[in-house]
Length: 190
Image (cartoon, rainbow, N blue to C red):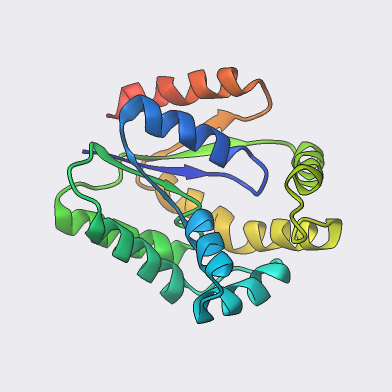
């Protein structure tokens, strides 16, 4: 089973690349961002609480995010593996994911980290805000997201580097160039 985590800062292109990876390798796409936006759109209690936290540019608690992932994994059958998009975002989530996948006998094959310079990330996110009308993408919130990423999420890469499962990709290129770099890695780790 091919289990991959797609990793990188906000605006790195994880969502764009995830669609291509899922299609090529026939994986189940588990995007915490999509799951959370669905809850927000539904107006659920969880969605309302999540919206408040996200609008401040902060991360949701490990407990809530892990519950979303576990619920999704338990419902999906007959797949070649999972592509985790936006998860894990903390070292604690990484440890929980490792344990969860080890129990199934199908550990994480690798964490693919998409690296993009800060100025380009800001440009992409502000552009996305205009195109998609995302009120949560303004400079103040984006900078807070970058701080949260540096403090809480970036250590996840170190967690997987220690396991020799972290692979870096230059995300400053065309969609196809980045995808080619990712598929080169996937072919080596699957």
